Amino acid sequence: MARLLPNRRQKNGWRYEPSISKKRLYFSFTCGRDVAEENVRMIDKLIDRAIYGGDPPGEVRRWLQQIDDRLHDQLQNAGLVRTRQGHTVKTLTEACIQAKQGSVRTRTITSLKQGAESLLRFFGPDRDISTITEGDADDFQSFLLSPRTVNRKRGKAEPIEVVVPGLSKATTNRRIRHAKTFFRYAERKKFIQKSPFASIVAGGSSNGANKFYVSPELANRVLESLPTASWRLLFSLYRWGGLRFMEPKYLTWESVVEDQGIICVFDEKRSKKGRPVVRRVPIDPRVERYLLEVWEQLPEGTPSDTPIFPDFRRLKNPNPIFRKQLQACLKRAGIAEWPRLFHNLRGSAESDMMKTDPVHVVCEIIGNTPRVAHEHYLSVTEDDYTALRESMIRRASQDDQQRETTEKSHPRKFSRTVSRRRQEGVKSTTEHDTNKKPRETKPGVSVDVGNCGRPDGRKTLSSRPGRT
Image (cartoon, rainbow, N blue to C red):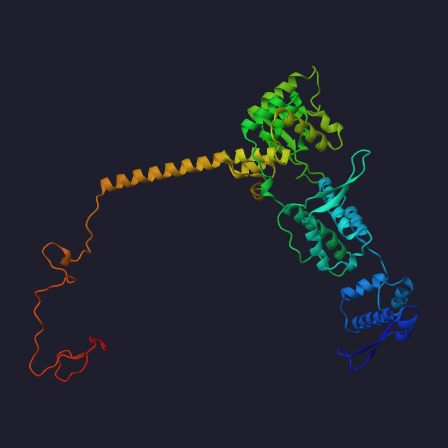
């Protein structure tokens, strides 16, 4: 192994002396002259790093990944490098996702897998994570925002090239946060010295362009096009109950507390292990009518633990199936599809509640915070602008009436600061008097600039020099 010997010529007082000679390291392999000179330069940098400390430059790390195992083993025996571990982008993402399986929700794991796919598509599965620089991280962000060409195949037809637009700013920010999570895990595991994504700032994940308010009139048109009572109940729970997409999965008939007029909804997002959280959602009259319609269709003697929506229990991933069914109903009714079908139904319900009810009560019913509500759910409608305009007109009318009442009860008085010279019969000093007599001069006194009638001609404080 290498050893350190005292030497005053070095900065830190020590001199690095490898146990293997440089000549043997430089030319222990057969290669061209140019390659040999490149290796000599890289080995010199490794020796400098061993003497003065610090991390090797990026070009040295990339060079270490390209050399063969024989030369790497010689450098390792000389104490210049560590054991080659070979952490790639694929192994890193798999290890990080596996480590987080028991501490995060299933939806978070799905989101992390989407971020891992973006990293693999840009860097490749075999790219060593130690060779990724901050510039590569910037290029990854630009890659997500840029359109790309993909091959798509439908059925037995030949695949065709399709230009796919780049991701939105909100989705790009979310993928950047995933990349920061993966490389922060590698940094804490000592796979790398510093994360290349540490200096990149990931913004918010809200997209105001996807917000859409589903008005009650539009919701009633959709309800008329739905085929079954179960579908009408499900849609009304989303629109007027504010439920998340997967929350009807856990609803049973014993969740409905009829005497209190509420539904107990299991909040999977806020629940921890062993500590379930249940939200109490008031039953809206527009939800109650469809709830009774579904209840009347059940056979007699149905147990109370029967699911209200058994299709949620049978399907492993009901999102795409329910989405296609709702899209088909909208198409038959001639209704244009709005963005984020189920999310905007929940946001419309919270927007309606915020107009009349306190913020803390609405957030407790919906199951989010005021910050999340303002960022992702609440939307401003045309009715809000109309109501604000009417409120402005009403306040202006009240101010005019109050001003008229004040003027009648307290008439205005002339200001006491009016100069007496401006009153009737008194001449103002600013008016030009044509009948004013000229100034009389006393004998022996000249009227010059600065001479104010003094026989010695000395100036006073009231004189203005330079005036003719």
